[in-house]
Image (cartoon, rainbow, N blue to C red):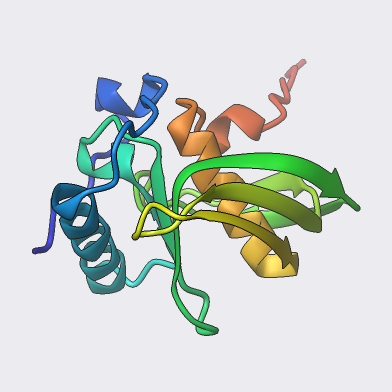
Length: 151
């Protein structure tokens, strides 16, 4: 089922999502809905708060296969690169964001089994972006504010 993607003015995007206590059929339906919604919107990542659910669930697909993570925790970050990012919740906005180029993430899969994964480059960036959503952080929070003084 395609869900409505919440946009910038929605307060749910600023709330820290809750840990998923039990992975069950409702969790798996949520993952399915998130993947369908992400694809429909032509995105490459989506976090549960973006569809109004305050659960620590993310999905991603950069064309190399689906990634589904429940209660993701980034346990290491290596390297650094700045690249422009967009967001389904902030249509039209592109922001240069500094991210790690390689990360290690632990969490649960759709069966509730523990997983420990390593991601690099674009997928590392997408996972970091989606984990930010779980903590109520948006890409515009990474913007450097530049003040222009006119004479």
